[in-house]
Length: 327
Ligand code: NAX
Image 1 (spheres, helix red, strand yellow):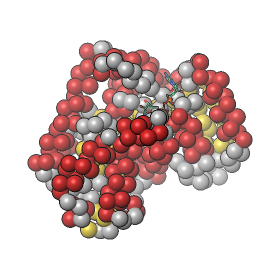
Image 2 (tube, protein in one colour):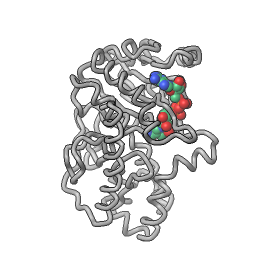
Image 3 (cartoon, protein in one colour):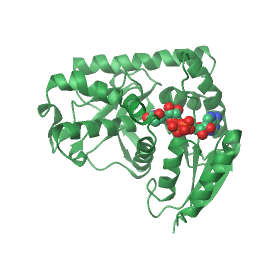
Image 4 (spheres, protein in one colour):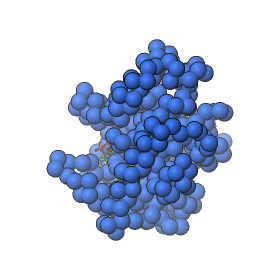
């Protein structure tokens, strides 16, 4: 039997945490043969609620759940962590400017980056879910100089899964028939859900839907899905976000199927003309715990414009957090 691995989760008493922890503990993320130790971080006032979640985790009697640690100190929660899912963040409040939001989150992700740098496993795989996810990942990464920059990733997988689901609905085909779509850029309304390489049942997706629907309806429906969920549910996406986090980490750790790719927010190496260092959604394949950008895809003028616009937004966010001294 395998040795347990350490999985740190922040914001563990929140909505996403309430779905995520149970899926990790049941083996959905790292496999049904991989025991896990959960190391849960919350702010002090939420520790009581977190304890309730821990009671429920224990009551599930998950065979793979080897131990649970809780703390309000990132130096404890990130100790020797092999995986870190940074979910807890400061939500945007009414009247908050982007700079205020980035500043508030800097107060969370800077010390968390420093703590990961100090105590996590040297191979820790970090996924940032808390918004603004891409730039929060950049802040954590820039404050962890001893870790490989590529170990810091941001979640665009929920957007990727939403894009699959919308295309499946439109074409009347099962989600499993859809391959190789890409979410480029920021997890925000500027993201670009790109169908130019996507296939449905092995045939080009764009031959099966009309161009006007793609350009003028599909892209914005995917990008604004989060707002539609809030409108319907009165709360933001939680179970679907947790599921996407599971998918992101599982594929990174265990690999993507041969001939298929997924979307991950990762540090740009300059591929596709995206400014180096931005944490940007790219098409990637994963193998042996490493991801690699899918290279050589043709980029139309339409795609170029969308890819540059979302890169521009991320550049502005980076400039803002630089001004605040966070990176
Ligand atoms: P909740 O407000 O339910 O939970 C967040 C939890 O984080 C709270 O329990 C809070 O006490 C905790 N927290 C705050 N500061 C912390 C800190 N410094 N250390 C540890 N814990 C801390 O939010 P939830 O619905 O779970 O969403 C969490 C984050 O995910 C939000 O930032 C949200 O915007 C973001 N999302 C990102 C998505 C993505 O696709 N990247 C989609 C879903 C979601 O909107």
